[in-house]
Length: 174
Image (cartoon, rainbow, N blue to C red; front, side):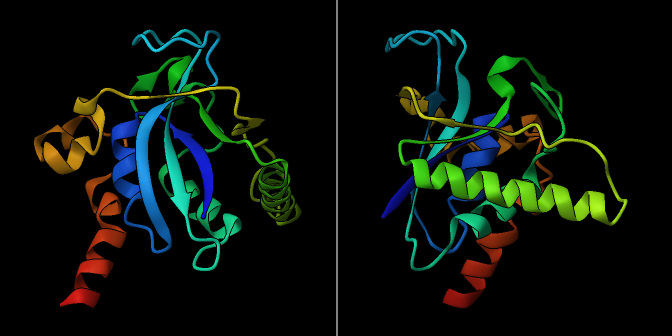
């Protein structure tokens, strides 16, 4: 099993989306790469993120990154949907330098492809950094949208996109 820490704005929707991707084994809502290493609920420089454990034999880091790009605006800095602030920045964090290299190479390939086709000249703003610290969110934030579907109204990810892979998994089990 491998682990990436994925920040894509409000963690409620990110966790709900990621946990249904085939190959993802477990998710945990939290915050990463803050200025202090404390367990209190302050967001001192932290990014809301989802600790994502996945089976590398079932999903590649590149594929996971492409799924991630479905739910974020990769050019936005410190903002996703109506959520604004440093804690809503986008990022991929890992303790494995090879993961970070692979993510950077994938982002470079995407940027090159888009600029080569004259579609965009913007730089992708997803930070790719070593994980310095991770603090799990309180229990009330774990699997929030599964347990409290009425909170979808606060999510920056369209509901049909949130359920895209959940429905595919459900239909395969039926």
